[in-house]
Image 1 (cartoon, rainbow, N blue to C red):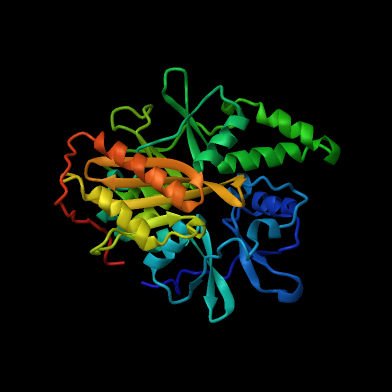
Image 2: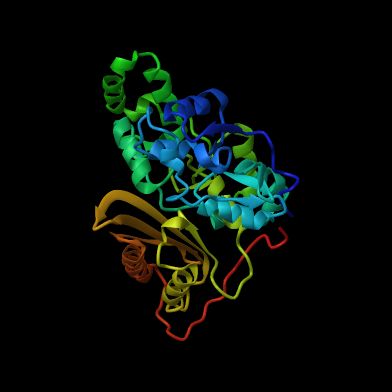
Length: 388
């Protein structure tokens, strides 16, 4: 299946010299998944990139700054697909570009866009092949009801996630707060003030408890439900993710399943080597995808009872630098027949960050119950949805 029948020409455009504040208002007014940015000056009209709502939240760029600060083509990779690209590769572009929308080209010309929702709607009937338990994230970052919105924003940024389950004093689920909640709340309240009052108003917003902003009640799903049912609920209700809870108690957080998790599952293939997804792939610098895959395989192959179904590497760049080299955070997450295992590390440059994370991954792997070291083992990899 290719994307020629599911891509659309309905999208918003802004010039690279437009103010960030204008882009924020477009998201608020038009409920967009992304906005195409066009270059100006010598390269006027050329495609420069895509801005998403999550990207705006995670950036520290002021409203008066230009859009070009977020999509500089000289420093940021630009995800693109062609009209005849298949669904599997398009899903990979979205996951690795950490975006929910990608531009679709016909030759050198921008033809339209394809969104995560477009893809999921197109493959919905095929998703009965998976259960939620096979692809959801078990390691959940949460927030307490009395934590502030400033803490929410920092936790979303630091972990590169889009939602946080909210827990009460007993550790039970009472709500959820997302990047969309934060942007919507901040936009509605800041617009009530004059320009001169905005800085102080934002500081007050950061001190509000998350309880005032979170959504409640929370949509949940059980681990034994089909991915088709989960996606259908997300599409019907307009959610980007669902909290996974035990069948007998929907107050207990067991995990999260998101549309990105489903897109990642669409890229599973029956391959001889491990299929590794890399979010923010433009940050890998001197590392190659092959080197990353081989190093992760070397760790996995040491343990005879662990079969790796999928590997995900996520990179995040901090502002701090050492002699021009940025400080990076790297997280490696493996989904295995023994459960989910992850390792996180920081370092200056992708190499350092990756190898620190890899070392932590191996330490955490050893702690998985029932894992035994076996240097001779060569694991078999399970992949799903090969009909796509």
